[in-house]
Image 1 (spheres, rainbow, N blue to C red):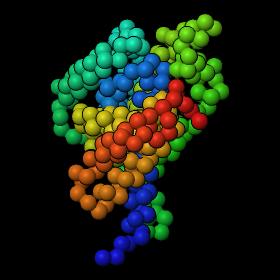
Image 2 (cartoon, rainbow, N blue to C red):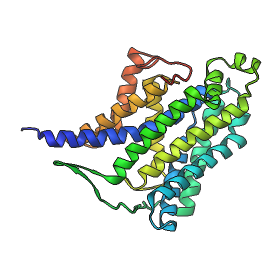
Image 3 (cartoon, helix red, strand yellow):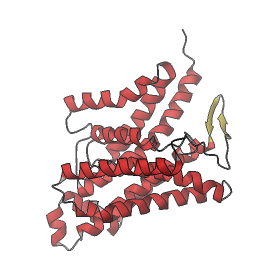
Image 4 (cartoon, rainbow, N blue to C red):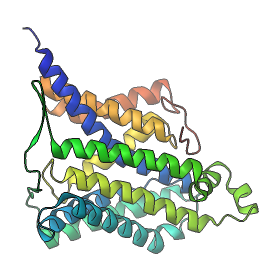
Length: 295
């Protein structure tokens, strides 16, 4: 059977968009691990909070995409700040197992509270763009997907500039690379960790907000995504932000191609099969495990 090249291109475009959205989640995890050396398993629930904030903000602002997007990002960032101040700030970098248990418990609590408040029924989110899109020959991409991909690219560019060229970002990199030396020059690890959490959860909220008009919004939507993002961080190399982005785009392409030709179950298995292979062949990840590498 001949394979339609247009179909392949369409799958590739869809995969790149999906991969960029995965990257927003994975980069947040990599950032948190790089600064405070924990894996935040409540990260997926903050994505879900961003998606619900988008779903409720859109009708309030007349289905206008950009104001609702800003609300969702702010709500998620505030959620991250609250979680840090109440729970994560009490953890030391040596307490990895304790951080896993606490963030897993927070994940379950947030999920069930949202499910109690808003039920488990999926929500279809509409925006001013509806199902309109751009046609390039026989290839079609909706405005919500195109804007989501563009927002992810802008977010990565701003993150790079922040980490590379601002005092705010250099303090994060200093803590990640050598905590003791950073303390000696007066950098406050608590403030830096708080800033990293807020920045990471803002990225996660952005992912949830741009996903809301693309897929159904449910209380459990963050559960599967966080484990995928965790796998991507491992594949790319813990603390390696460019590695997480490359791994995420690769996963998006792989899932889109697999979904186009095989049963959907193989999409869900793909990233974990790749993670196992990478761990067996390159335990430090494809791009070397580093202290929050940004470029």
